[in-house]
Length: 402
Image: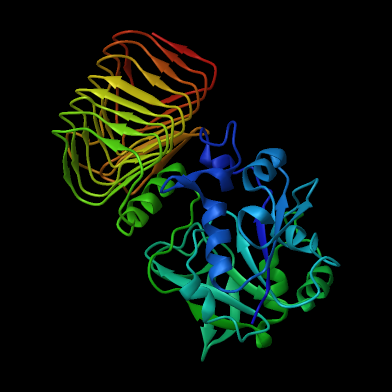
């Protein structure tokens, strides 16, 4: 049985802007808890007793959020990567600290222990999955469960890709030093795996898998995980509240009279819902939230401290920490022609492959009354949107929009 694990959590996650302006990617929430916390919980189910976390970007926030072993009942070690020089360089940081077989997981990949169980008897293994479009991933060729080759990004159309979940032993460190830097000047873990190809066992990932490379991927992952939540009511529910679905209600939260909950909804601690609010399937409130009178939220992640207090509509969106939506602020989530929604990021137009997507909003954004936000809008952190504004496109952090 494999007892140790390495979680690669040092990167900045620039494609996740604006959500990573002020928090590292592994701390972004899925069903109300950071991705990396979900990983640790699944590893513990497998019998792992020591988790090594590679940290770099905003490292103190990760160590503060995760804490130590007393929180999870297993040993937590932190390894600092001062410079990010590729995935292989990241794995090399564990040399001398892990001297036996270990799981290696990208810090932005939700996992389940059933998939990892099938890898336990291997010395070197990788998980793969078939996707509709492999253009953003490395394509994997294998036969009879053994690796043949890994092709770098650019395979358009349906293909089998690297899922970012591995089992390694200390041989990987020697292989990584042996292959050296790639043409782009980085150490690539796939090069080391390729060098050991005849020893690498390949397993197919079963069930849901999502590479959280873009903000809307976080929303898609949350959608799926919300279908599996358990009923839990620790807060207070007033009279005349209708609940039609599975509800998780955190401690010290209250659902006020006249509120209607439809579908699976996850509400964290210290939240105020209603009176007369409407929460729909897939809604996740991460804590310290207020969803007030005549406000409707559908399939959205509302991060800690964010509020939609009066007459708001939020659909298929991510609202960052500490945001406040002014009375009457509405967010569109469906194009009039019902086609797939594009966003503009770093000057590039990107197809999200989603037909429903509202806003991706950074931290501490304030909107004025009756502001309207169009589909596929990206809003940076600390942005102020004036009353009655019609907002569409991409808005950089610390800007003011009228």
